[in-house]
Every structure is written in C-alpha cells, then in structure tokens.
Length: 389
Image 1: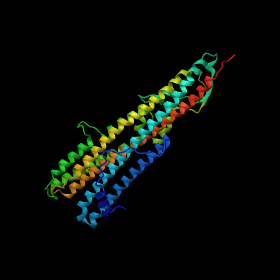
Image 2: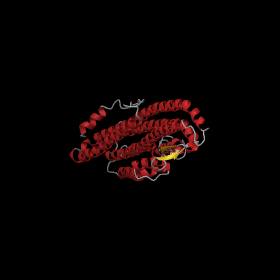
Image 3: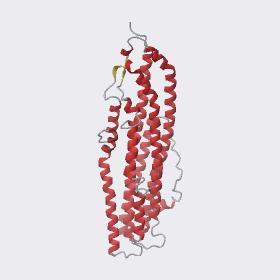
Image 4: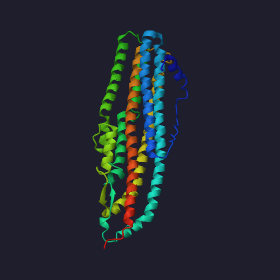
C-alpha cells in the first residue's frame, strides 16, 4: 500500500538507483518460445507495477491536499523521485532482457547453422544425384506452401524487414534523437527546468504563477491525448509494417503465420522441381537470424541512450527548488505532472512496441525452424528417389 512513509522510504533506498552497465538477463532456458514468454511476463509485470504506482500516488496527493497540506511539497518531490526510479527500473529490465535475447539468438544461430550445414554437406550431393533420375519432378510430400521470401527475407515487408520498421517507428514515436540531438523528452524537460526556475520568487497568487500552472496543465493534456491516440491506433499501425490490418497482437501473429505458410493447411505437394530453391532457403535461414540479431543490437543502443536521457531529465527537474529557489508549489506540481505524463507515454509506447517485436521475432525464429525441419524431411525423401520406369 502506498503511503507517505513508503514514498519517503522508496526515495531513501534508491541512492544506488543508477545502473550504468545493465547485465544481460539470464533466461532459465534455451527454448526460444519459453524465452519469449518470460520476456512478455516481465514486461507486463513491470508496466503493471508502474501503472499501479502512478494511480496510487495520485490518490495520496489528493488526500494530502485536504488532510495535511503542509506535506504537499515533500510528498510531490518523493512521488516524482520514486516515479523516475520506477521508469528507469522499467527500462533497465527491458535492456537486460534484450541483451539476454541477443545471447539466445546467437546460440540459436549457432545451433541452426551447425545443424543445416552438416546436413547439407551430407545430403546435397545425394539430392543432386537424385535429379538425374527420370520423374523426379513428381516426388511429393505433405508440407505447407511456404512463403520463403517472407520468412527468410531481410528487407521490405519480410518478417525481419518489418522488425526494422518497428524499431524505427518506436524511435519516431519517442523521438529518441530529435533535431536537438537529444530527443523531445529531454529537450521538453530542459524547457520545463528553465521555465520553472524563471518563476523563482513569484507570488503564488500572481497571474504569472497562474499562467505557468495552466501552461503545464495544457502540456500534460497534450501528452495524455497523444497516448490515447496511440493506443487506439497501435495494432493497425504496427500491422502496416507487414501490410497487414490487425486489431490486436494475436490477430497480427495469426495473419503473419497465415502469410508465411501460404494461407492453408498442409497439402501433398509435388516439390521435385523446387529442390534447388529449398536448399537455398536452408542456406539463407541463418542470414535471417543474423538480421534479427542485428536489429536487436541496434535497438539496444537506442534503448540505452533513451534511458540515459530519461534519467538526466529526471535529475534536472528533480533538483528544482533544492538550491534555495522559492517556487510556488502549484507550479512545481504542474511541471512534475507534465513529466509524469511524458514518462507514462514513454513506458506505454515502449511496452507496446516491445510486445510486438518480441512476439514477431519469436514467430519468425519458430517458422524458420519449422520450415527447415519440413524441408529437410522432404529433401531426405527426395535424395532416396530412384526414378520411375
């Protein structure tokens, strides 16, 4: 339960809150499906904790207005400090898990490459020899009509290419590096800091104080409205990375799988004339995983830079009034609410994109594994073909 005591305690215990070198999260398994599920659980849990805190602090502050007005200043400072720590903790968890996923992708790539390379060394000569036998084009097997370009491609609206698009979209929504070179979150708070400091010594009942408070409240509403708009359009917007209209993450994944498998159930398919393309698909599968790993490595750098800016902005605003400046409480409250709204926006937008990226990345690796297994079984059958009379 959130109280004045727990807020103060949280701040006092956060002296070592800055994490300069976040270690990679150690997943409990090498299974990529289970790693994805663990990532999703941690993401939802961290976001839920932060939302709960924001809602709880609003209630505490509202109650203090009536029961203990003299505590508002210190409470507001503690709320903001603890909120900032919660946001940084949220991003540190994502950074740690992205690092952990990169390590798992390396291991997955190593295993996949080792398996397919060794298999091809043995089987490719036999497959080529089987093509010398009459009737090889009629060899069939039960399989999906795999969309190889979509699964193993690395650009455009391929699965891996779409992940690149999501990384870029996240950066655009959060303006990780804007025209100022530091991003709109940091620059907005720098403006807050300058504006609020300019109110030092202002009479709390003056028109200047009233206008400053009003301006912050309008800016806060802009961020909350932006978040509402983003949430209402997010599934469809994310689906556009693959030219898919989606109403939810589950619908997106279902449509992606449908597109990858040819949109139908397995059928008995004649594949003898496609063996060269199937071999090429096996060889290219590792390139796709490499591309996905590179996308996450780039994303990791952006996440780290963004977190540093969030932390810096929090320090800049959190230091207001600590150097003897006398600033009306309503102004600091409104400015803090403004940054709280920006933090909430950053958290919710990031959570949405991380959820989509993690789900699609996992589907892509699963489909590659499934396709390779199916192709290797079919090609093994083809290698034993002795021809028709």
